[in-house]
Length: 148
Image 1 (cartoon, rainbow, N blue to C red):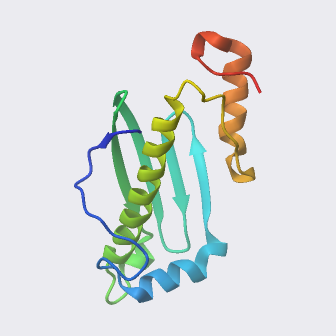
Image 2: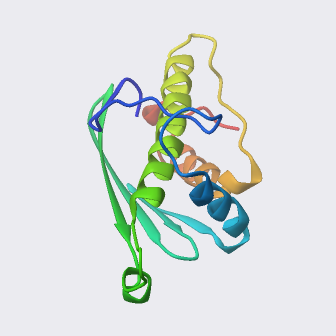
């Protein structure tokens, strides 16, 4: 994911900058216990929240360019509510995605260092670690994956 992505560039953050409705952020933070994220290898990320599902398909095009398609799905009962506007959800994910992409780009740069010997995974990243162990076991150094 390092380098370039195909979404239009717009800087936003969660510290009072940008154009996200504070009510939407507080609702999403309040509902964080009603959120489930899944990685479906090789390139699909799903994020299910109380009122929507966000699906992200990643298509690597070059070592420094990944095309990312983001789709937002809402139940028809949500869409039928008076005043329904998906803008809050979309803008919130825009902030989160751009922050994540920035971190990923930094990690990609760090992995190019001759001193890179692997990283550390948080417990929520166990599926990522599992796939790396699988690849290391079956492809080893041919895939450029150091053994743990």
